[in-house]
Each structure stands twice: as structure tokens, then as C-alpha cells.
Image 1 (cartoon, rainbow, N blue to C red):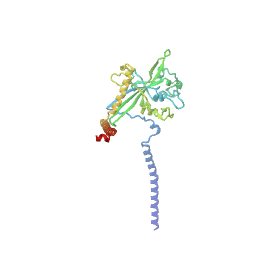
Image 2: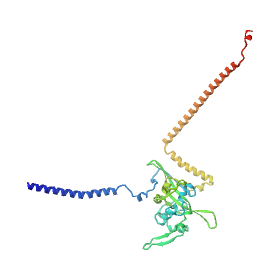
Image 3: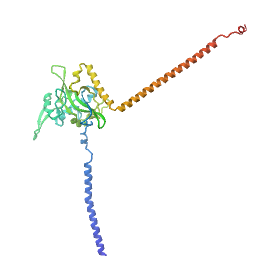
Image 4: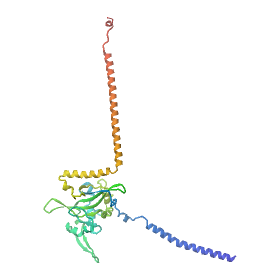
Length: 354
């Protein structure tokens, strides 16, 4: 009996040891698997999330698109959010100051503005930051870091020509995505334009500086908030959302065409220019309205029914008015007859006897 008890105790001790070892080994594996699943999940950090633009990426193959070039005048009320403050105030800067700092730090590339005005966003068309400083006569100081071959250009805030950048050229693409059946617009490129007058002249000359790929710029614009209303002084809209939701006002100066002509080249007068701009805006709107044939037919049917019902109501009202006028005329006629008969003099008894 004692032998069996000893064997039983030994077996129980072995089982407990095995179970304890299993728990000690299995628990770290479960934690490791859980941690790996958590790390490989779709959650993104805040910094990574800010790298995504609010704009929808345009597919490479679309059945319809139209490229529009606009001028954004920063003196207009809707565009002044990109201009102020002219010089940085604390952490608040305007759009050009942000662009200038990003170029100085080498975070975004800039591309040459060609004579034809077309943007070529390729590596062989990149411009160096030093060339930009020299071309537009921007004062700078050269600093070299010890132990590094990189050359740093130091520019004071007062020397950044943000006050002279009074307009932007902007290229946008309107397209129809047949896969998602959506009609969207996307900003493709943007170009700051300097407005400078000569030393001996008051005439202002415009100098387009360089083209920027909007997709390179948009991650930084998503972190820059601006104020877009005089009635609400809270900076609650990012610059990326400002462009994505089309809160700007831009006049069309060119569309992509086979002759590569601007509107000014074939519109000889200002009135002709305005007429052509309205025509292009109307073409964009008309294309969107005629995308869905069934909807347009149904809308037309509804309008026809409304018009027919309105006509029926008018005819009913006219008939009722006629009836009312007829009845009123009849009643007045009867009243007149009664009044005339009652007002006629009655013959006396003597005359009747005679």
C-alpha cells in the first residue's frame, strides 16, 4: 500500500511539474503572438496618418479628363488665407514661407518653370535651391556643418520674399473615374509668382518662380492650419483641406490644348476673355450634369409633369373664374330686371277701369 501511495505521489508531482512548465512556456508564446498580431495590424501612427493627402488619387487610365490652369490672386478675399501673415508670427506662417523653408531643408523638390508655362515634374527638370536664391536676388548666408559636405543656406525671415508672392499658378485635373463612377478634381501642381516693380518704373512684372508637385507638398499642408473666415478667427482648416474642398477662387488662364495656347493668345479683349472663362466653367458643369442619362431623363420627366400640372391648374382656375363671372353676370342681370320691374310705375285703378 505504501508503495502505491509513493508511486501516486510521484506521478502527481511529475504532472504538476509538467503543467507548470507548460504554463510558463505557453504564456510567453501567446503574448508574443498577440504582440505580433498587434504590430502587423492596420493601425497607423499619428505621424504616418498625416502623410496622407485629403485628395483622391487619380487612376492612370481614365476615359475622360480635362486639365485646367488657374491664377489664384491673393488679394481676393477667398485667397487671402494663403497670404497672411506675411512674416511668421510664432508658429503661424503663410504658404510661401512654408514652401521656402521646405526647399531650404531639402524636403521637397522644385521644378523649372519653362517658357511655354508647362510643368515638367521630372528629375532632369529639377532646380537647385541656390539657383532660386541667385535668380530672384534673395539674400542668404552660407553655413557649413563640421564633418559634413552639405552646404546650408541661412535666410532670415525678413529676407524671404513672401510679401511679393501675390499670386499662384495652379494646375488641376477634372476627370471621370469609370471604375468608381465618380467625377472628381485634383490639384496637380502649384507655382508661386513674384510681383515686382522695377527701380525706375511703377509697372509690376510677374515672375513665375518654379513648379511644385502637389503630392510632394500635401503631407506638410495637412499639418498647417489657416483661418478662412473673418467672422470665425479660429484656424480650423488645413491648407490641404482648403485645396481639396475648393475653397479658393481661381480664374482660368489656360487649358491643355493641341496648340498649347493660353486664353490671352486667342481672346483679344477682356470681355472675350471673361466670356471664354465662363464657357469653360459651363462645359465642366454640363459634363457632370449629362453623366447619367437616366437621371437626366427622369429629371426631365419630373419637370414636364410639374409643367403639365401647373398648366392644368391654370386652366382650372381660368374655367372657375369664367363660371364665376358668368354666374355673377347672370345674377346681376336678374337683379336689374327685378329692380326695373319693381321700379316701373303701376297703373291707377281709374285708368284700369277706363
